[in-house]
Length: 74
View 1 (cartoon, rainbow, N blue to C red):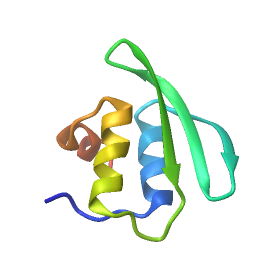
View 2 (view 1 turned 90 degrees about the vertical axis):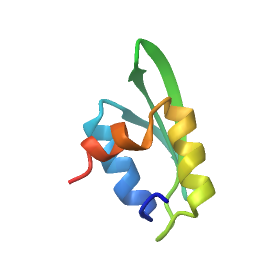
View 3 (view 1 turned 60 degrees about the horizontal axis):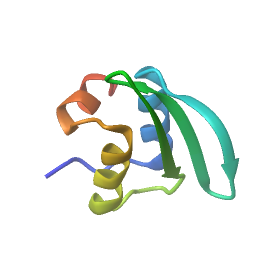
View 4 (view 1 turned 90 degrees about the horizontal axis):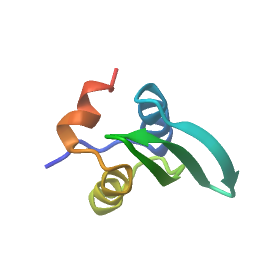
């Protein structure tokens, strides 16, 4: 089971992984970056706590595994 993160933590972690914030509309932040040689676009809701399914969807959009994401968490 993945640990629960806030939207803000996920955005900062993805930025450490090389993603850049492109825009924000309401509470949703759009990031774009290259991961494993592919341009990925990720939408992250800036909620206090992300549901497990939402977090897993964000990882799928980014093309990352949970362990790859954990490497960038501080």
